[in-house]
Amino acid sequence: MKTLKIVAIAIFIMGSSLFSRAQTTTDKGRAVDYEALAQKLVNQCARIHEGEIVFINGGVGNLELLEDIAVNVRKLGAFPVVTIGSDRITRRMYTEVPVKYDNQIPELSLKLLSFVTAIISVDYSETPGLLADIPPERFVAISKASEPVNELLVNRNVKGVTLGNGLYPTEAQAKQFGLTLKELSDIFWNGVNVDYPKLEDQGKAMKAIISGGKEVQITNTNGTDIKMRIENRQVLVSDGSLSDEDLKRGYAASQVYLPAGEVYLAPVPGTAEGKVVVDRLFYQDKEITGLTLTFQKGKLTSMIAKSGIEPFKAIYDAAESGKEEFAFIDLGINPDVHIKPNSKLVAWMPAGMITVGIGNNIWAGGENKNPFGYSFFLPGSTIKVDGKVLVENGILKN
Image (cartoon, rainbow, N blue to C red; front, side):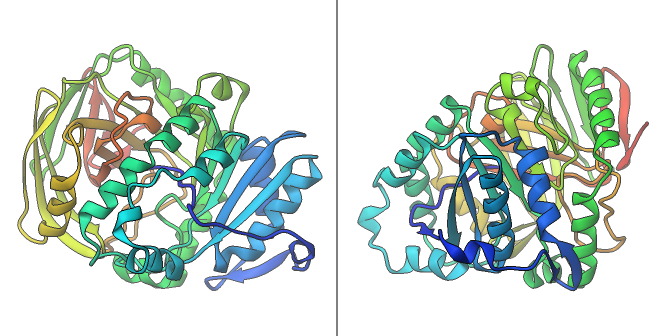
């Protein structure tokens, strides 16, 4: 699920170290101008203004970029708050902190969000199966306790920018996708450096078509065939920039996910009918194959798979009611994110990618606030709006 997460235990880094790094470095074998990237994140994506308080979060390996973001925030007369996370601290929070504290409301996050106006977050996890052995009930309890934080984010319309969008290049991620680290890094940075004006035009055109539609149908040769109603639903576009119009439309429209390039919406509740077949997905670094989801009246009524479903089924069973609702449709439009043939790469934004989900859909303009949510990528699918083909067999139609 797309979400902006507040780190419950944060290490605040302020001081002279923020100003000690060079502008250009090598990231995963590719030269990256972090200073230029930071300027883009602060000025174009988040549209930070004087007086704002900006929460900046990332991992220990992102320190140089976080420093550059903080400096660029301060150059505008805004105030940065920098926090650092890591797989090590994430792991220890579950293995060493007593279970009795899982139900604690995260007061620190609530206090931070009472004055923070924007969040800039950089993905940093290096270990896909980091928490695979943690009982699913703990995730559910912690998510439940965090509901007031999520509500505050939405109610205060806190702007958000996330760099990563499920594609941030790491050794583990590349191995999972069947790619070299360089291949994944090139795919990622090409997507980040897309032609944004052209992407914005593509997003507007696709939004106009979908906004005027009444029914969507998604099909695939693997057996996927599902329909739902979409009339009078808010259609959102992630094009890498926040406009004045976006900021006026509320929380969901005020989020940027990079690499950008998505058009998405929450369909009319209770209308999804049919079947979704997911050839392959990963949960806690375990591969699930041949997952089949059946929906009736907008709710998931059956979930079976050829193999590997047990860990995912455990977290699903532990979640509260609302988890079963069909949540969203997401259409990728980024022409510079290319899926290498015969790889296992899936992501939100490649042009022609279709993604659907269950559970929480606040980020997509929906009403389901359930802390649980999950997304399913459907590469090679076809999507029609009132019979008009927008994507055919995974190819975005112009």
